[in-house]
Image (cartoon, rainbow, N blue to C red; front, side, top):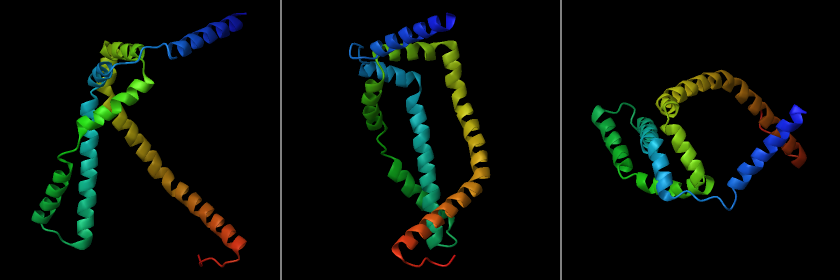
Length: 180
């Protein structure tokens, strides 16, 4: 009996949520989304993301330069650094944010944004915002350790399966494969 009542309550709740998300739900305004993004410190997170991409480009550009010039001088490496900085100096962060706002508006109603803002404005929401970068960094470190441990096995399995597939295709076409 309790189980049936629980299922009915759950069904009614889900239906109410579905109706609230339907056509009658008020869309979040651009201002609602920008307030949400500000609270979530999205601009600072995007700045960090862009800085990471820029650093990755610097490493790649320097590695490419080192392939051409075996022992680059500090001045040459500084020139590479300046080239990358110049390429990224006009990154259109505001344009990116403007492009993201309508995406959030399609997926979140005004009520959704209000509830999210209420949560992240609360002490526990603020704590989550403060702790989230450290949790993400620690999670990425844990994931990286697992991936490094698993990559040889995954690569070996993938190489074996690709070789089998290639052999099957060659047999179908009557061609001979390359020696292993």
